[in-house]
Length: 389
Image 1 (cartoon, rainbow, N blue to C red):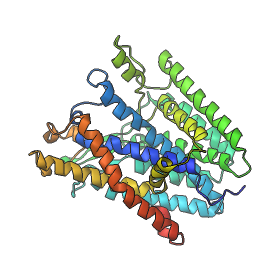
Image 2 (tube, one colour; image 1 turned 180 degrees about the vertical axis):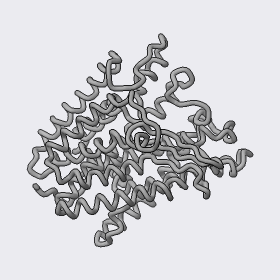
Image 3 (cartoon, rainbow, N blue to C red; image 1 turned 120 degrees about the vertical axis):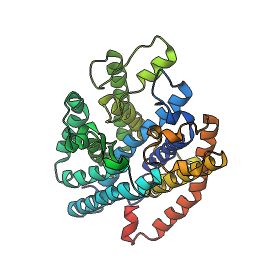
Image 4 (cartoon, one colour; image 1 turned 90 degrees about the vertical axis):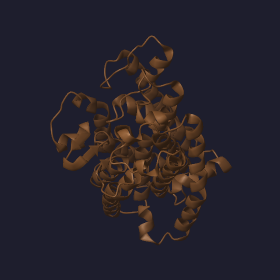
């Protein structure tokens, strides 16, 4: 395998940082916007364009990060043996699943009883790494074919449903209720997320030293534009690629919301074409970007998991303070379930004029912390545990 310089690839750090920052906007909206407790921001009948686009811009985060995690795994593999990389991916995958079920779940709910264990994005990244730990031993072309078959073909399974955990974890997702108010929420089933990471691993080979940068830029632009055109065509024709399809409401704002809302849980083909198409185009055209703004976002991209955990605790804590100061009561921010399904929280919340400043404040608070941790990682590369954060 052709070596890749130990110098980090700025465009990858930049994109990781951007999606981390944008992701925090969605989570701030979850806690602070009044509509979060009443309706989906993607409901054409109830939402507005400002609310919708506050949510829509964050759709790019999970696909981009899963794809970039695959690229990063390939790059790491240029400095390790296949066996070493496989062991690392397996261990880190298990670590992510553990963190999802403990620290991350607590950060979301602040519920010491853990009444709503949730399998979400960190869990699916962990399982995807475990699958990738085995897949890297296969030929790269096989990985590409497998990934494309899953991404383009998994919507054929939308009409197939089986009761129980196995199919919910694999494809459908779902909620499983237990006595005394406990339930398990499977928000991110494994298909097709495992394929998003594995196709990222394949495209990591485009960052090998002997791969021409201009050719990479051309390929990524073509792939990205093709994905977006295919998304528009399939969405307009309603023939394949999404379980719900586009609905014409004869009202421009509602039509826009419907058109740009392919299914995310699980992500349909159209959802991945829309989001990964933009991801490819950004990677193609951001390699030469430099400056203080790039450096700002790249800090978050170099310590994404550390930032992810901190931002959930910080947003939830600030929401608790706002609830207390507004007379609503901090106790109601300790959730037995996610906010939309927790009736006692209805009535709390603010407009977007509050959501956006709180989001910016969260980013500004976390920036110096992430910068210090990034410096610590750079100065302590020999400490094995840092590679898990």
